[in-house]
Amino acid sequence: MGKCPGCGSWETLIEEVDERGGKAVVGKGAKGRSASAVATSLSDVDLSTGLRIHTKIAEVDRVLGGGLMAGSIVLVGGDPGMGKSTLMLQVCASVPSALYVTGEESLQQIRQRADRLGIDVSGITVAAETNIEAIVTLMTTMKPSLVVIDSVQTMTTEHLESSAGSVAQVRECTALVTRVAKSTSTPVIVIGHVTKDGMIAGPKVLEHMVDTVLQFEGDGMYSYRVLRAIKNRYGSTNEIGVFDMTSEGLVQVTNPSEVLLSNHRAGESGTSIVAVMEGSRPLLVEVQALVSPTGYAVPQRVATGFDGRRLQMILAVLEKRGGVSLRQSDVFVNIAGGISIQDPAVDIGVAVALVSSAMDIPLGSGIVLMGEIGLTGEVRRIAFAEQRVQEAVRLGLTSVVVPHGVVDSISTGARHYLRPVERVSDVLQAVLAS
Ligand SMILES: Nc1ncnc2c1ncn2[C@@H]1O[C@H](COP(=O)(O)OP(=O)(O)O)[C@@H](O)[C@H]1O
Ligand SMILES: [Mg+2]
Image 1 (cartoon, rainbow, N blue to C red):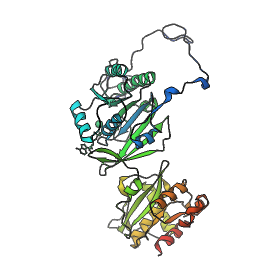
Image 2 (image 1 turned 30 degrees about the vertical axis):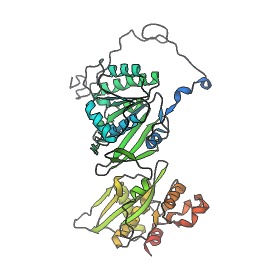
Image 3 (image 1 turned 90 degrees about the horizontal axis):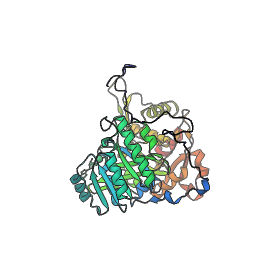
């Protein structure tokens, strides 16, 4: 039914599996037998089933928290064309035996992809199947070391009439696979689609059901892809893996800072280098700003890869506390490389890039900035200052602008690189005066 006869709303009815059986009685199971549960002392719980399988792709292992946990179920989401199928096929090739189930592509397409990637296909079994019961039978008879299901939106269970991809189908199929994964200790990776607003299509409960949710992100215009853990029962959600999409598949980028800075040209106005954290990993990225006289009554403020409201705030602080008014100018800020930054430590880098562009003064070479801007114009302390400084020094940047408050937390060996600042006006003086 499209319309609910009860409340009159549309498209809200969800099909449920009919669980036949008597009324539940306290202490009695559905079939009337008395229900009992087994309890074990925590110290007696067997840990041998909690072994991790290492894929040979270190960036994937890192995001998973050190490898695929036996019996875990991992949901991988991402926009179409990000490379979900590609990366998962690569993961399949890196484990002893894998079952790759596809409901989206033909077996020929997968073979072609494997040939293009140049991977060893000897351990990979493929099946073009959308019936989840049939897939579960395959799982239990083949006993592969990994199962990949591409994608959960194409799978259907015999118990429901609704079409593939509906809330009920996605939920029931995932629930069934989860039960089998746990009982056979087989890790299962389920690929899921992402809707227009960036959610994994299907019920939110899907994300609750699985152990790990990984999100594959990237900008269509760039070949970089970031694999990020949104939820992880077996590891930190702070880790990211960085990949480059090439014709040989997704290649790990072990030194993302070098890649992100590879196009940086010192001596041009309107750019700065900032040290941001992505999880526990410091990244150096280039901030670009363009300030030009406006032709509009309301000047434009455009931020790409950076929060637009934060840009407004920085402009206001620059005007009130730094003596730099950009009211008559259009302002564009871009984080180079197509990545998106939430870390507030990027603030002073953005401020400096803006002023550098407005005044057409390039920054000196070897400068890197980190610090959050407060509303009173102070440069606020940031977390993980030591890691950021070490990354900057490792890449040969020797003039590290840091909030005054973090100097004591930096190891003494690196302190001579620091240029502590207390206020936004100090930052501008420190890097633009020379
Ligand atoms: N012959 C090719 N050479 C290089 N890249 C390719 C080739 N064919 C496909 N790709 C890349 O693979 C991407 C599709 O990857 P895929 O794993 O199918 O994505 P998803 O499963 O996330 O939709 C395309 O967007 C394209 O960038
Ligand atoms: Mg795909």
